[in-house]
Length: 632
Ligand code: ADP
Ligand code: MG
Image (cartoon, rainbow, N blue to C red):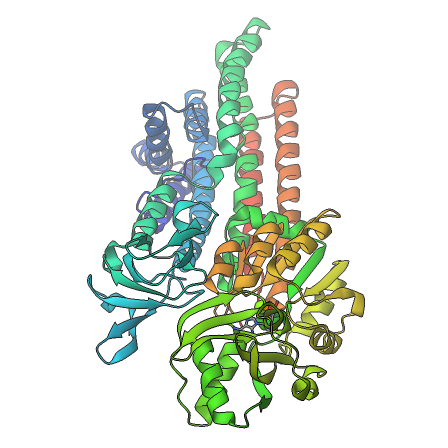
């Protein structure tokens, strides 16, 4: 309703106090008119209280808008209507108008406060810890403790903890959070890096140039808070509807006054009819219906651990009928186990330390499994430098004996290594195979198995039951592994695509998108492009890579697949509520205007119809706040 909800004070306490005072005044005026006449002094004081508490805030907002050169808005309409009512001796109706206007503004404000907190939560996705390079090696320290001059190590897939400058290593960086530019930027020693950007593939050593409080995200949070204070979400709608329409309503009411007068009514009666029309035609309910529903749904989702980056993603999720899923780390837990290994020279410990050494800086779930296996045997990973990740293939690096690689058969083929017959026993299995090699020589292999998330199978069923017609699993892993996991999840072979590179996922998502809106759910660096290409990109929250979180429109913070079906149900409910609200608000407005123009609709009824309608759409929207998205 109040198209311009500036955060005046913000927490809504004073809003509620003002609304309370308005109602108190209204109560006394009503008492006077219907039950027990009050002494004139008290009556006028009560009327003044209702008008001042209910009318001054919107009047101030309206004046500020006018002062800033904006067109008139609903605040001004409401104040004008209330004053017109007072002028024709309908002080009570004017007070009702102001009281209800005030309470729906307060409710909207509350819904928006929650949404603002959700945005702040999103901002908190910045890393908590950084890898500080000290005299005794690399240690994990809280990001707040970093000082200019410190050196931190950035692994591939990690977000930059504070602003800094590259001193060692080269690689590409995704700076889209800060610059909005999607293309990765090449970084080499001397280049500046910004907090919250994502290191894509190289291992970088960065010298801190700004402490946390002065770094990019802190500045962005300040910007966002300021931007939100200045521009409420509902403004987008009221910009084109509210403002243009407000002028029309004001002009129309003036015109109506003259028409009624010309038709032979007394001036006071013509004024009464014009005031009635003014109230009847005010678009409060239409303007508030969309944001009330969207904000409520967004904050209900945020409370359940599902962060939408805006209302557009919510609306698109409601339309999606096809879902594509990444396998590793998305449908599966990503907490893989090393199930078998063969070191071709027979020295398993040496083989494992090398493998864990090269995987030490990778964020891939496979790497974590190998590191755990090495730790379980009480071994220390070998020192491997210049590590570069190759999404969907593996990882390369250099140790004291030269270049090393670890990855799947595709990577091994690229390295010119021939398949090793002694590994055939591992090769045919339904587990993920990781080969370790030096140039064209294969040193050995390990198998890694991960299990589906407990929530995955049920979530797929829930999605299908809710009308999702196509579900596809897309993975960079080998087909036998994909078939084992897919089978456990109830997927049919033609719903499983294996052996994919990041670009293949994009191509398949595009093909699906040709048949209707599609959502992609993923966690890895290798999913980022598909997440960005899909109509709705959904990333796994905490364990997902930062790149994926950036590319996505929605984040599942609790990593519970059940959240996915819940979020879609919420989105569809929100879409339904928005439709209901718009139809109802427009319908009510048309009925009231016709009543006001042709059927002698009394002003009190116009006020009740108008404000009651507004209140109803707000409450209808707020219903979504109660929608349960379970917590993980
Ligand atoms: P998914 O698409 O299912 O999430 P990925 O595309 O991340 O899987 O990985 C596909 C395959 O690439 C893995 O099964 C593995 O063989 C190989 N791979 C990717 N990253 C690594 C790594 N860090 N170490 C070893 N192998 C890797
Ligand atoms: Mg993955």
